[in-house]
Image (cartoon, rainbow, N blue to C red; front, top):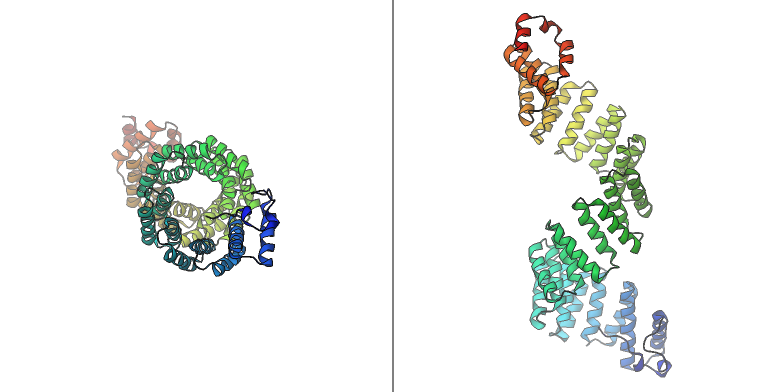
Length: 474
């Protein structure tokens, strides 16, 4: 892209060095030059320099104002239309940007940069195949163009065509191992392809070439977290925050790493910092609530979950979390209300149905709890504990045969749970299946000898039956 050369300007600039320390002062001088008027080349170069300056500063509205002047002054310059297109792309006016690129391409159809930039905008507009076609056309004009290849790979990434993206990026770093952007994007691909060791290697390669990229340190931390290397992930988040201390996502994920290490006070500090920077971060409020709940500070946890719900009334996880706190505080009615609200938002959540079943049981709503336990085992047929609680509750309400089926299923899933054998023995005794009851009791006692004391209390009448007692001694 063209850059301003001070030697081409009026005598006002003749004695100035090519690059001033304070470029903003130069821009003001160029603006003054435009006000005074001048010949064509000086005006074009001044406008180009001003536009480039505002693009670099990400002041796109100011850049667009001068880009409009530029294309008016130089309507047959493809560079002028390119600049305007790039600005419009950055303010999400994709169709207008595409019109500018089309004008530029009509003026200079052999410039690969024009096709690359149009491809980027087509990608942003969701026109994936057209974007890829433009990148391919740029490659016919400039074979091996890393810019075209890189942007084509990024488009594949966005389209979730990760293997195709990785193939291109692997080619780029093979041909040019110093391409730091390709290493970064390849790390991103490998991360989502669950190739975590490769992703970590790529981020390290990128950081070796660009050590001040806080996003790279952050992404590296995410990969290490996924690998369960939480201490190392915290080190990466700290590097990211040393570069960009108001990076909310890094504070949040640093908190998650501390939470995974059971360092809950440190996690709370991180979540609170994230929330000072972004008070509307629902996930941070929710995880702060989780940390307080783990510390059994249920009143503070309730406040956090409530704040998350205020910000997002459909955040069912926070209804679940708050309900769990109410449950622990033995406020079962409030717990049940939150569980029901969460289930209105997410029906296929077995843990929620389980919590609801327990709350209903604690409120004496036994038939309701049976229906909820049944939902748990329908959604999670391998849940041994749910089958056990389902069987116990069925037995209490007199559904004997159904209780036996549920307890048998619990034992099938885990034949090392003494309580399931013990409860099954009680059911079998009611069904007068004495031999089976004795076998189940023996299994229970073998797994947990302390259950004999419970047996002495619960089977008082049975122990006096000589036949049963003799069977138990065998």
